[in-house]
Image 1: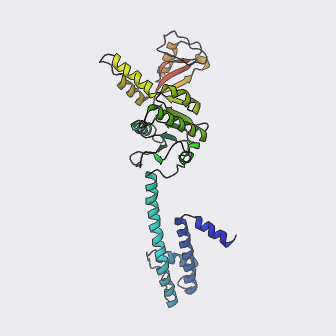
Image 2: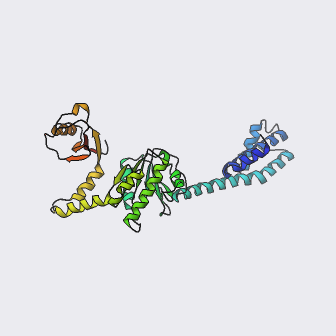
Image 3: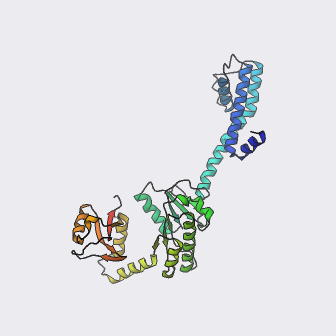
Length: 335
């Protein structure tokens, strides 16, 4: 191993580690020198190193003290050189800690975890989604990617923020998308048009799918004509927010003042989760009423059945369950 190679490796190390190595070498040097100069006062090299560290850090316990003039000269040299180096190390370490916090808040640091959720796009919907996710699953790791935010305070929103364009591979790699469990792409409501917002969503979907072939991608699409394109791009699930809101508006306009469809759905989604379960072999040919009774005992609410991609809600009690049917259930989040 050549000296040149060692120098190259040394200069490639972060400043903190270079300082630490320099301090270690300096303390070893002075510890050995003081042991050789005053072997009776410093019986071992380790005693000399201990004295050098305590002296260089200006702690001064006084358990080891040079008595001879040569020993005191060594101490003076150590104080003039090593003391400043240790102080500089502590200052650099403090500055690095502050810079790390600053970079984290400003979205400049890579995410190193796995099995996490990635939220793309910052708006009121994703803000509330973060609150819901943390409330129901406190251990959930969330990475937020957005190009408009300047910073995100971790104490306010416990997410790992990455600032940048989600259609760029480098930004997605910073979010460690290759090890992510799911990705939510929220429509950009600040776009010039809904079509432009959908185009951005599709581009982000393509980029995510290109970096992870198996991740679950939930994409919000505003216009119906872009739904197929989003699916072709690799989206697993399409959220048609405009269709949902239009249906909700219709319910609010059509029903009497005594009903509150919006509030009912909101409370339902806060406390319950939808779940699809394929019927088991022993449930074939049973009636809908029999399965309702069975799931009530499990504290599940059976809403309907999916058969050949057709939805059947509020089925008659005698509705016969067939092989391949998928049950639509409501289950409390705690379950």
